[in-house]
Length: 186
Length: 106
Image (cartoon, rainbow over the protein chains, first blue to last red):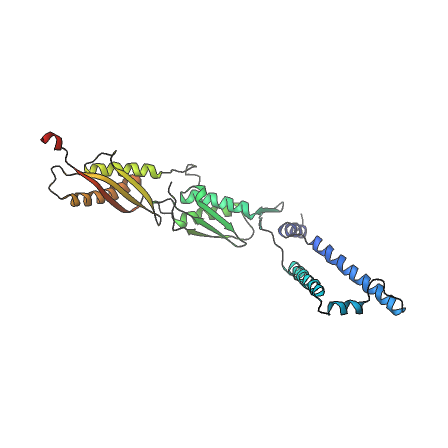
C-alpha cells in the first residue's frame, strides 16, 4: 500500500465524515442562488415576483417583528453550528497503531480498558479500583487503593506504560497515575 | 505484565484482618476472641482499627490502662506484621474489667 493511500485511510478512520454537513450546506446555497436568480430575472423583466421580491424580504426581516426576530435567531444558531462544523477537525477518540501492512486503529475506550487492567495488576489492586481516561497524548489512571495497603503509583504507571507500548501507538501516550486519598475496604 | 508473576492477585478481606486483630487483642488483654470486637475502616489509605474488649485484671502488677496501652501497641505492630496492612491507629474501648478467679475465690 502506498503511503498516500495509507495516510488517507488512516485519516478517514480518525476523523468524522463531513459529507452530510457539506451536502446540506450545498443544498441551502443552491436554493438561495436559485431564488435570487429567479427573482432577479423577474424583476429585470418588470414581472411580478414569483414568491417574494428580495426587497420585500429584507424589509420583512428588518421590521423588528417578533417572528422575523425568531427567524433571524434561528439562522444565527444554524450559522454557528455550520462554522463550528467547518472549523473543528472532528477527530474521533481513536489512536493509530504502527503496522507495516495495514492501517490499524484502536478506540480510546478499548485502550483505556487495557491500561486499567495493566495498572491494576501492577498496583496490586482489583480491576474495579482503577479508572482510566485516554486523551490524545496523555492517559490519566486513577487508582483507589485497598485500605491498609499503600499503592505504588510508579508500579501502576510502569505497567500501564508497558501495556501502551505493547500496542505500539504511532503517537506516544504518556501515563499519569493519581492515587485516591480514599481507599476501598476489601 | 512481566510474565514472571502469576496472573491474579491476593486479596486480604477486612473481615480477615479484623479476625487477626481480634485474636491479638484477646491475647494481649486476657479476654477471649469471642468477646472481642474489632472494626477496621479506611483512614486516608491506611487502616484504622477500633477494638472493643473486656480486660482481665488478674495478677497483673500494672494498671489496666498500662495493659491496654501495651495491647494497643502490640495490636498495631504485630497486626501489621501478620496481615501486611499498614495500621494508622488503634482505638481500644474497654467494655469490662474481669477477674479470672473471682468465682473460685468465693
